[in-house]
Length: 284
Figure: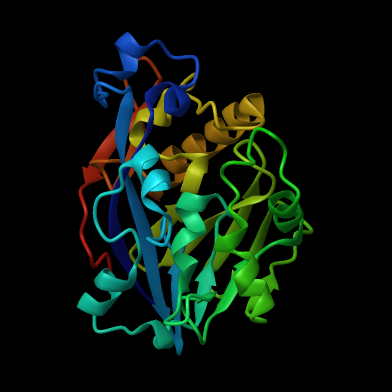
C-alpha cells in the first residue's frame, strides 16, 4: 500500500465560524484573520494505491463556481486534485475509487466538472464514488444550517452517471477494504466518514472535519458549522485518546501548516501535538 498527500490549494473561511465560541483574541494568535475576519485553510486530499486500485480520498472545492461564489472564499491554487495527480503521473481515468468523507462543497466539489459542452460530469470517469445512504439523504434534503454547504451540482451528476455507491452503515466502525476502515461520526454532520489506514509503518487517520486542524485539539474549539457540537466533543475526545495511546498519525485536511501529527499528553494531562510534519507528497 502506498499513500500520498494531494495538496490542492487554500481557501478562506470566517474565523468565528471555524472556532465557534472561542474568542477571537485567542484563535487569532494561531491563525490570524484578514481585514474581513477570514482565516486561511488548506484543502488536502489523499491518494491510496493498493493492489489495482487508486483511491482518492476527498476531492477539494473544485473550480467550476462563478466569480461571485469564489469571492466569498478566496480560493488560491488549483482547487482540484488533478494537477497534483498529474505530477505523480496519474490521469483522471486511472482513479478507480473516490472516497467522499462527506458532501460539503470543500470535500466533494472537485468530483464534478463542466465538460466541453457545459454539462456537469464526474471528474473521474472510471471511478466508483463512495458515500453512505444516511449522509446522502441529509445532503439531498439539508437542514437550514447546512444548506449552503451542500451544493447539488457537486454530487447529483455522480449519481446520474451511475458512479455512486453507498458504504453500509450498520455500525460506527467497519472494514471497507483490506487495511482501510471507516469510522462514522455525527458531530460535524450526519454520518461523516473518517478513514483509518493500517500500514506496516503505522496507523494513519484521515480525520476530515472530525478534526480539521491541530488548532482544534483544544476541546472547546469546535466549529460553528458542526450540527451537534456536544457530540463533536465526545468524538474528539475518543479520537485524541486513541491517537495518544496507540500512536496514530493524524492527517489534517484543513490545517494551513501541519499536514500530519502524532499526539501526546503534556505535564498537566492535556493532549497536544508531539511530532508534526508539513506537506510531503509521499508518505509511504
